[in-house]
Image (tube, rainbow, N blue to C red):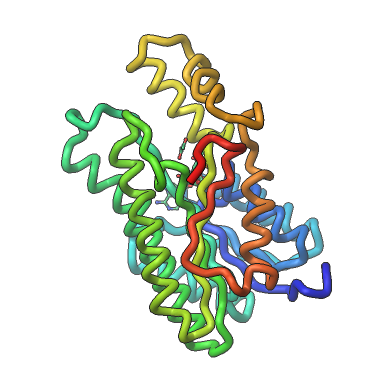
Length: 263
Ligand SMILES: NC(=O)C1=CN([C@@H]2O[C@H](COP(=O)(O)OP(=O)(O)OC[C@H]3O[C@@H](n4cnc5c(N)ncnc54)[C@H](O)[C@@H]3O)[C@@H](O)[C@H]2O)C=CC1
Ligand SMILES: CC(=O)C(C)=O
């Protein structure tokens, strides 16, 4: 581990697969102890990720919880603090996407998506901040936003709004918690080849009358660096956000998208 990066206790939500798994394994390789969370339905995959972390010589803990449930989130943070001794870095990564014309999105669908992508991030930010304030020596809180937090995609309207709100929450939390030595930042991936994009591709193809695989090819043409992202691209940036190198950065939601959007 580089001298400027001290070993920390990290919790990553939505870590059974995709970007969350990539982040968890990268931070373990960086020398941190990494607790992992996901929903019950993915608990076997989640345990396999924890085993990989232990295989890298680090400590891990498994905390199955639905991030939209306030009691479950509090229990998750308490479990990590008790099993690994403290919590230094919270990565509120869990999220879901729904592809649908805005005119057809029902209030129930809107609330369901917001309960995970926005309330879930809020609950994770708050529970982590309270634990860090109790510890008394600061911490790092990191959230999953998206390029659509800067410019929405059509057919992903309420998803885009949830990510835009994460960007706002991240700014406000950074303002309120700077006094405790807590920094709050978010990462904004572009098009990452995970199960989420398999789902988006399938649904966009249905709406746009394309074959399966054609939507991701079409959207990939927007990427100046010429390839779809992999979780490791995002994890490398989160490694920086979790390290001491980012100590003077707070309230930012940074695009890591291979050059799709330029602000
Ligand atoms: N894949 C992409 O292109 C992009 C993804 N993102 C964001 O990055 C994050 C990770 O995305 P991916 O890895 O691609 O998605 P994914 O669908 O592959 O993985 C998401 C994980 O979160 C878990 N999860 C879902 N709801 C949960 C809940 N209520 N409580 C706990 N865990 C829950 C899932 O079970 C799954 O393991 C999400 O917040 C997503 O919105 C942002 C920009 C682009
Ligand atoms: C899933 C997502 O956030 C994008 C931009 O594709």
